[in-house]
Length: 245
Image (cartoon, rainbow, N blue to C red; front, side, top):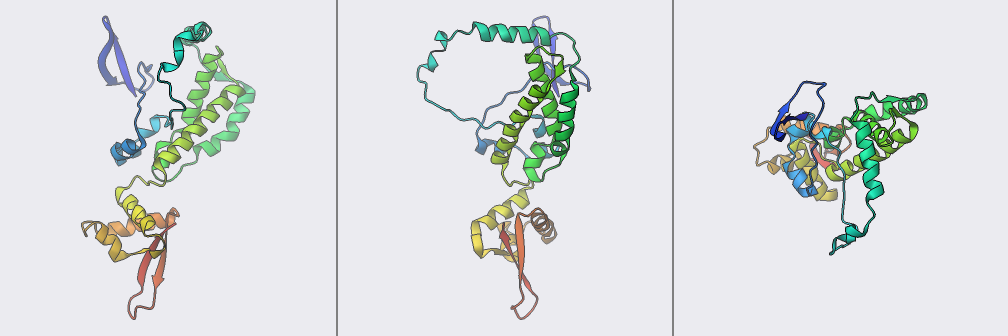
């Protein structure tokens, strides 16, 4: 986790990695397009636990507001007052626990949340149970409660569901393996014609070993992303043809 170090002249510019248990002093909010994200989020960052520390939320503009929506006309006092009150409550060292009814609800959803999912989508949503607990605690603090109650957990689950749906839309069938993703995209592009092993090897100008391609094809087959058919009417060794599913 990235933590900031306070100094006498305000927030220290240096961000350092601290040991587990240190209080976080910085959050990261990033905006970008789906195209940019898929281009620049490397396989390593998806696999090493970096990407699943974030909530992925798909957002879009709902209306055109050339004059900014006349925000200055809105009575902001109630909203500001509520947030200041919640901040004051949350600034105190209070342990956030769960009510018995919330524990019962949590035990029901913990199993499904903890189940691993395949591919890039699974890599970026791999901390679902931890994220939901944190969100539920935040909802409790906003309510100035030191206990997570069922409505707080329900709200956290609803937000996580949207984050998960967003991640599924953003990353789709991506596996996180560039070779497997290239093969899968090519198979989808050929439709019902499919591709032979020679065609697939030619995708990489024969710079990828047959062993590596075989491993990735086996993975696509195992995860239901591709299917294999053999043509036995070749007069010799049966040939493989691969199709996207």
